[in-house]
Structure formats: C-alpha cells, structure tokens
Length: 253
Image (cartoon, rainbow, N blue to C red; front, side, top):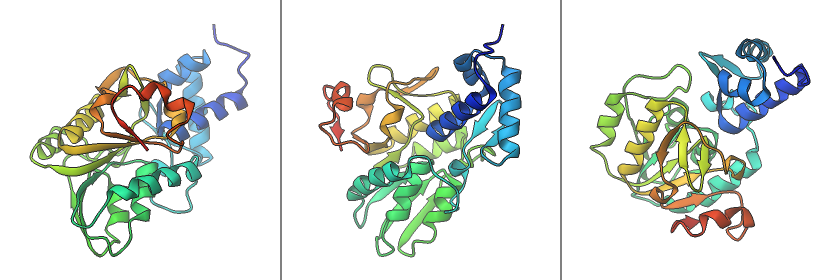
C-alpha cells in the first residue's frame, strides 16, 4: 500500500531536489525512496515537466540545466559549483590536451576558461561543445557516435573505441553518485563504459563533485575512488566530510 503520509507537494520537492543534485533520476528509484507507486511518480514528473521545472524522459527525468548552456536556466548550488570550477581551472595550462565531461559543474569550468587559453579540448557533450566553441584559441574535438536525446551526450561503443585511441593530460569528469568504499557509480550501463574509457585514457583524472553527492551509490559501478587522481569539491580539504577519502591516496582540492 502506498505511503499516504507523503503529500504531493512534498513528493514534488523531493523529486526536484534529486533531479537538481544528480542531474537525472529514475522513476523506480523515486518510487522506492518515497514508498509510492511508479505511476504516482510518473504523474508527478509529468506535472513538473508541464510546469517547465524539469524535463521528462523515458523512465525518469533530467534537470533543465544538464542539457542547456542557457545562462537563464537555474543551476542547483551554483555558488558551490563555481567554486569547484575555479579550483579545477588551475589544472588547465596552455598546450594541455584535456577532456571535459557533461554536467552543470563541468559547464561552470568551461565558462571560466579564458579566451586566450590555448588548449586542445575533447568532449562528448553537446552543451559543453556549444560553450567551448566560443573560445577562439581552443582546438575543439567532439567524440562522436550515437547522441542521447536525454543527456545530449555521445554514448556508444564507437565513442568508447575513439577514447581508447586518445591520451589526455587531464580529464575533468562528473558523477551522480560517489561513496568512499563503493566508488563512482551510475544507473546507465552505457555511461559506465564511457566513464571507464575516459579515465583509462587520462594521465590524470580530476573528479568535480559537490559534497552533497557523497555516500550515495547506484547499481552499476564505474571505478574505485582510487582510480581518480584528484577530487575537487567546494569544501576546504581539511573539512571532516572529506575524512573518509583521506586514506585513499588521492589528492583533495
């Protein structure tokens, strides 16, 4: 029997919070979290989509900011993400060959890259590419293949094959879920394969991650936390929330 104690307004807020934090949610996950039916969550998502608060996709929903480089779209915890981006910018120097992932934090990083910076940038994300192409001194290379209508990213075996032939100085990656023991995880198997290929192609992998995503996991594991070189958060490196990561032999920024 459904949990009648969870009011519609409360469900809507929980859905909005999760979509904003993770960029994407599954109907079945939200139904389990709120102890209601999938049909109930589906109706909630349809209503939120109609009100242009999120975008409904097959089996779930995504944030408007995840698939847009429109400055008018609200970004969840934008101040924290801009701080993360500012820290990560220190890794980008003239002559670097970098990969930049999709997502709102990576978008904040791209916005900060100075027009005079001369780098080669690879990406799988159409919104990232659309923003990066404005930089006159950046050689931009889009890794092709099947484009997901949901995430506006290239996700295919072809993309994995292309990544196997490239070597990045740094990759700047995002994740929906991270746990010190379980590692980085996602609920989309294709995305898992892409993330693994990106990290394998990188001399150093830099994870840009807001601390609200800590201690969460999904069904498909991408990599161990120790497979990344640096974890960049909005927190001071001495913050107690980072203690579980301090014995994992990674840099904290």
